[in-house]
Image (tube, rainbow, N blue to C red):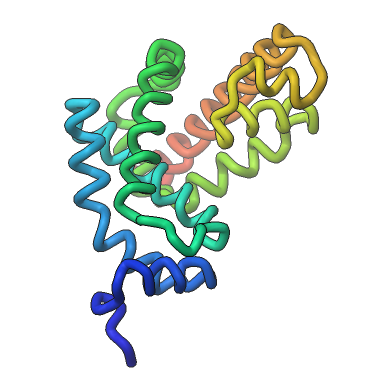
Length: 195
């Protein structure tokens, strides 16, 4: 069995382009410190930097089969990190107010740690997004997953920019409400299990 840690950068890119998951794991292992340190320096916040690392590698996983043959992984990952940090900073005010509106007691965070792991939570969130009305879901995904501006989304979908803003706002309200309800259901369930 060949040791992936011995692959050159070019060989790693070739395997990523073929959708090789072992190559992705090796890329993660090899470049995680680079991405994390770059994000941490820009944000001066370890926890936010960890979030950026996760976002960058999720993005790479989704795009790995479309990489160009001459892709330079460190450059690509540093640029993706910078873009993610800039986007995070731009969205800072709305993101912070959104997160603070979702905050529940420390008890809740402890319960969810024991009740759901990250993958289960991601599946839950994805399911809630998928249940949004089709047009709202499309606008929300373009805004949050593709990081497109309201203006770009409006032009792409041939709708008013105000409509885009309203759809994103409505989607966030719906998701906040649904996820808060699910949170309280989990707390209730956990209380019956733990007590």
